[in-house]
Structures are given as structure tokens and as C-alpha cells.
Length: 203
Picture 1 (cartoon, helix red, strand yellow):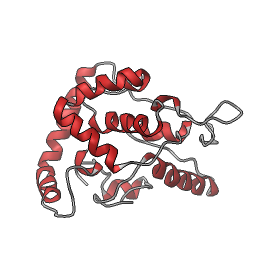
Picture 2: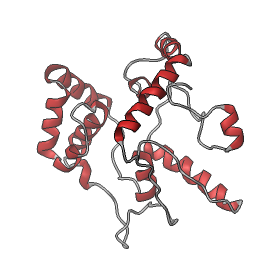
Picture 3: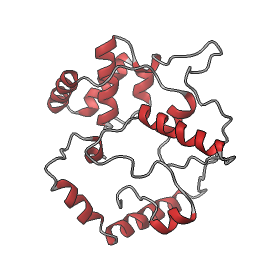
């Protein structure tokens, strides 16, 4: 609750939210599942003559929803174990260098230390023999086959002075600590059903 900066009960009562408390930390949730859930919520909003507002920090899921998803293979435990072993030997920045050789476009989009996404891009190449960046399925119109069928207006809040942004990030983190973030993480780490490889724990 604290680590994800979830809107509190008062905020949710004033501004109704969807797609909150969908899964538990033990569950794996991906962009495909998000697109399914988001499309259902968007269609429900339109059925009530309401305009949904999609709000978030990372653009990964929003991009997947609006532009459509690539048809990529599901996760493969054996390939991931092999990649993890390689990374343990040479480090994720070196793995990123390997990705740059086979998929420079995807590599340019990722930080060398973004282990989860670098691993996924290498996994897709290992399973398909093709770079992840070139596997977007498009319809006859030139758009992804499952792109959002609604017009979208993007609004970005970008402070003119980034030092103000950095100060607000620091204040927010201090507030999270004061609100019990450390105890929340300790409680999660203490659960026997969770492990460091789960996306929730990596996050």
C-alpha cells in the first residue's frame, strides 16, 4: 500500500479509481492482463457515458494499451534460469551489451541495470530467434491489431525546474518512510510464500 503510493480511502472516495487491489504480491501481472482489465474498465465507463482518465507514472502499460501488444512467447523458466546464471557471472550491464548486439533498438530503450526487461528481451530472442523490437503485430491499417479503438489525449506534467521535482521525490520518500514503508517491506520479506524473483519483490 505504501510502496506503491496507492491513493488512500479518502482520495478514492472523492475520485473513484479502478484496477486497484486486483492482485496479491504472490501473483504475476503483466501488460497483457492489464490491457484486458483496462479495456473492461474503459468500456464500462463509456457505457455510463463517462470519460475514463488513465493516470500513472511509468508509460509501459499505457503504451501497451494504446498502441497494442506484441505477440510474444510466454516466459520460459529454463531460459530465464540460463540467463540468470549468465548475469551472475558477467553482470547485467554486460548482458545489456549482448542485447545491443542482437536488438539495438530495444537495448537503447533500457537501462543497463534494468535486469527484468533486459532478461525478457534476451529471453524473447532465445525463444524466437528474432529481436523483441520487431515483433509487433499490425493490422491492415498499419496500426497494431489490438490498439485502443478510442481517441486519446495525452497530458504530461513536466516541471520547468527539475530540481523542484527531485526535491518533491525526496519529500515523498521521506513521507513514505514516516508512514511505515520500512515495516511494510519487512513484513513482505518475512512472508514465506514470496521470493526475490517475483515481480512484486523486484519492484
